[in-house]
Amino acid sequence: MAIIASFVLMVMDFRFQQLQLLRDGITVALHPLYVIADLPQSFTSWLSDVSTTRQTLQKENSTLKEKNLNLQARLQKFEALKAENTRLRNLLDASLKIDDRFLIAELISIDLDPNRHQVKINKGSKSGVFVGQAVLDADAVMGQVTQATPLSSTILLISDPTHSIPVEVVRTGERTIAVGTGKLGLLSLPHLPSQADIEIGDTLVTSGLGGKFPSGYPVANIASINRDTNSGFAEISATPSAYLERSRQVLLVWRHDQNNLER
Amino acid sequence: MATTLDQNRIWIIWISLFIALLLSIMPLPNWIEGLRPQWVALFLIYWVIALPQRIGIEHGFICGFLLDILSGTTMGENALSLSIIAFISQQYHARLRVRNFIQQSYLIAGLLIIQKLVSFLVLGITINQTPSIQFWIASLISAALWPSIFQLLRNVRRRMHVR
Image (cartoon, rainbow over all chains, first blue to last red):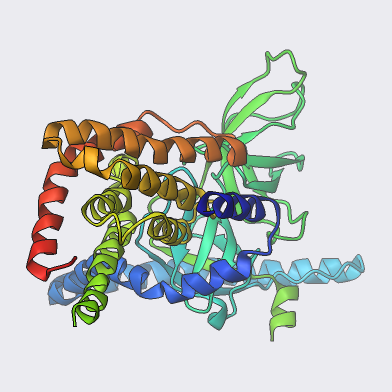
């Protein structure tokens, strides 16, 4: 009996999406376990918060102020460029807004199955998180939301072997797809021909095709290229720019159009 | 009277199994993450061997199901393997009980490999990945932990009069 039930569960989970509701419900019920598992981490970070001295805080404050000033200055330039960009696009009759909305979420430090690249965060559908939403860290794209329950949600990282992300080479504008390999620091680009104009060090950004990821966010840098293959396609690998295994805080993105829908 | 006492005591088993579930999602450093012992399987095997009339396949199924949801694996993967493990240990509990710790550990290692084998097959089918050698070594580490877990849970069982 149990064996048949397990097989039915596995097939249904893998082939169809009907079980998502059941999974969501039980995840909500098991939320206390996540909280308990996260306790040591929250306790140590609380302890380090409490025990920092005045001096370190002052030092940190001044560096942050400096950094803020720098960013403000860059932002001024960005504002001017944005205005110019909008004006030019108006001239071209192509309306595109660059404003995306962000929400900061924190990772719940628990370990999921090490063979699958998933993480849990402490924001859920209560905060407006939805399935398919793009997730960034401070540097680049991390992945997308695959499960959103009221209090927490699961993110599939771009390095998971079942994950693919549409990208664009910044230098040439060539579009392709970056596929996860199951190794944290490695993506592969299986669909580029051997003659493709691509070099080691090229930056890949999201192309916005497919509608899941907003366009223009950095994803990875090309790490190696092997053009000598029999298939006619080059073997290209790329290193994700996001700190997939180290980020504690992540950004959830609402694209401008989704933003309007949500509000 | 006796039945009410029994009813009251079964929650101790569930609490220990929940602790095992908790241990299976506790954060570990990245490099030993793959070596995490199979806590739930170990705890389950103990309870099945100790109380084969009370604990069986259905408990294995429920624990596995919860473990699947907690750790984000394909639903039913651990439910299947833990049901099989519970079934085998229920059938052979008498033979397992009479061995000493060392011999038990060998047999437990065999049981634990079943869980890894099922995961291995499911991983291969669903995401076409072959896990590293760490994946298998975890079973040996878990088997090495068996004597201490056995003694710990036996103490708990005797203190709390779980029958």
